[in-house]
Image 1 (spheres, rainbow, N blue to C red):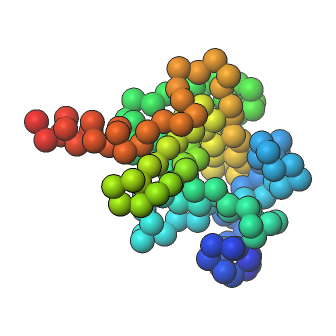
Image 2: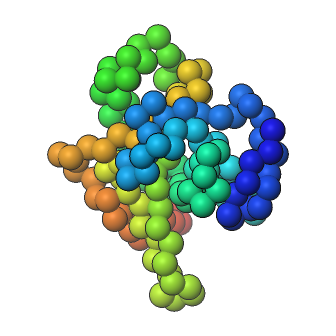
Length: 154
């Protein structure tokens, strides 16, 4: 099937790629169908694109790319969503990023307090917001990548 997007124009997706967000996306009521759009040219970033609204898309990244020890408390999410029968391998975790500026002034922040968790077996997704989190909603991604580089260079 084809869907319209603001970022990519009209794109072809498969029906089985569509994810349902039963509670919708916080801040965007009424939109429940999304697809993850991944392109080689923009890796490690991808887009969480609404199937219903061309203008609704969020830039995302796997938090494990820049924070290998990130703990999204998947067990809690599985309990709340009643996903007990799903193997952990079926889950994907993303965080929404904000990219500002260019060159030396470029900043990339990630919302580690509100991961988007995808259950590929059930074709469902949820953005779970942890209010008492040790993580920030504006985590500096570039600083984390610099720390990883320093560790791997040693």
